[in-house]
Image 1 (cartoon, helix red, strand yellow):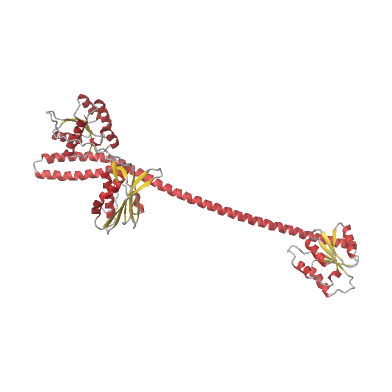
Image 2 (cartoon, one colour; image 1 turned 180 degrees about the vertical axis):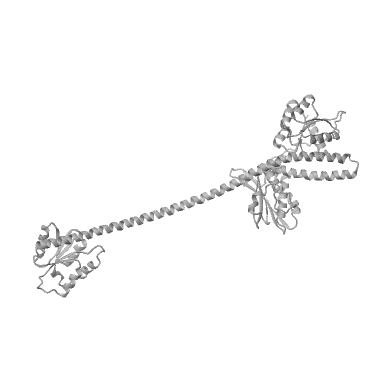
Length: 556
């Protein structure tokens, strides 16, 4: 359609002549009957229009003028006008119409056929270039739209990728934070474990020293005739007892103390302890107890739990010098492993603990109190008790808002426990004329001398050995009535020595005297009732020996 030549020559045979000339040149032509038909075909598409000047005599109509004025930017439609001879004067309206056509070639009639064909070809080529420009502009516009679409898609993908990266970064930061918190807890746990092993070793040697001092002070108190000397020894003995309590706290932190785990209903224990806690914290602190609805049974050492709660309550009181609220809660929780746990929390409204030092509060000897106002062993003892009982201890605090210490223990199933019959104590001598013989195996000479002299003072016959090997030789020589052994000794420890001794005499009564031991191993071998913790006094020694001898006679 766009390669056609439209012809408008309404008078005579002009249209047929023009058509025949152009067709000889190979052009496709269409003769239009009037202006309306021309406009209809022009809008459908054409290369050029050949028209006679007479058509313009009345001027262009509105549709023709509108078409010319609203051509696209690439279009300047070419016209070939066959004008009348110059002798004929053009009307003013015809002049205006020629100007309105714009891109035109005027040929004066009569026209040479070659001239007409040349003008038509020239107009055809001009229009072909315009169509080429249109295609280029269309391609450019299409490419622009494609680029814009690609840019939009790219921006959308960038936004999506940025969002994904931001989400991944957030997850990574959370994972890094979680990992740092876990690493911090692991490092803290390892540090506390290392300190625990160190304090356990120190406690053993310290207890041996205290025991030697304590026993010799008791000898002085018993044998001294001067009352002032006896008073000096008594005051020194009181200091030794304070040192023994300090060592017991160290052993509690190191988880080396001997616990007596029993089934306890925690709600009942907390309720029974409330009055003592209220007295301990004073009238300025209001004590609230929030107990869970169900029974909360746990297997733990009741005395140690009470001591831990009192320690935490006193710490809370010190953090609230102007008074406040102390809340003790119990809860039953279900862990991720499906096991139920008993949670005990002590919460105060005190000054709180700075975040920078919260990781140190379970360290032994660390305290936020002023010099001389605390040993720094209260929370470390709580931590040691919870860990040794198979539980955990955590602290959460914010400055100015208070502190919460939380203990968790495995929930136990209540069951009836049979209480063992308490063996009667012995005064040190049998009903026969023969004195009871005790074999003391202890590597520390000062401690061994103190124990042997104390037993002789209590009217026992004593043999002694400095290590496990010499102790076994004494056993093979003659069986004693009671075997008393230390735990940490060179060569073989006390548990190994007892195991070897019972291969010789399976029913021999055994008493373990130790300042530090693998209590689980000792209790498995000799039983809880047969462990005597250093330092001990003569009365405790006499009661322990008599109790073990009586227990063995009952079993026999």
